[in-house]
Picture 1 (tube, rainbow, N blue to C red):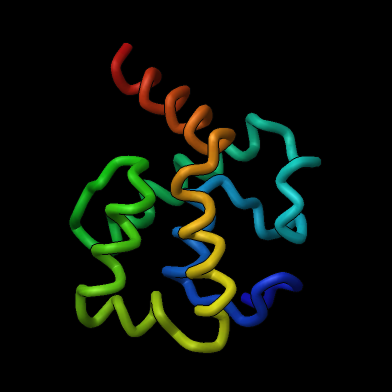
Picture 2 (cartoon, rainbow, N blue to C red):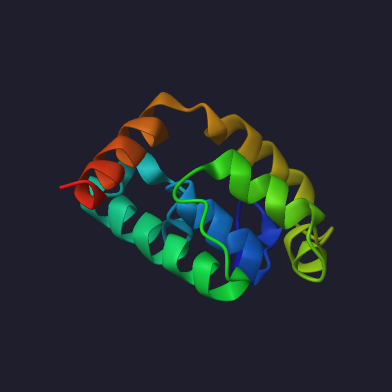
Length: 113
């Protein structure tokens, strides 16, 4: 998929950005995207990453990033150089983002109720 902000992103890159609450089909302008849509994208991206890898790190963006960076063969897709610079910067910035953490808290409370 080609995105205006990142360029040509791979499947794994798109899923991690989705897990981080980025809604790529809206040009990555998540401030104007309804929260409910962001939560849906985060849920779907989480399920897809679990299915793709056989692992489950919940909504822990740092854990997913570390796993995908070091685990062959998916690391080739995740670190594909065509969009890696922008994707890796965004992921590192979003790991501690208070708005993303608020959404994660909401998603985790769904699981625990």
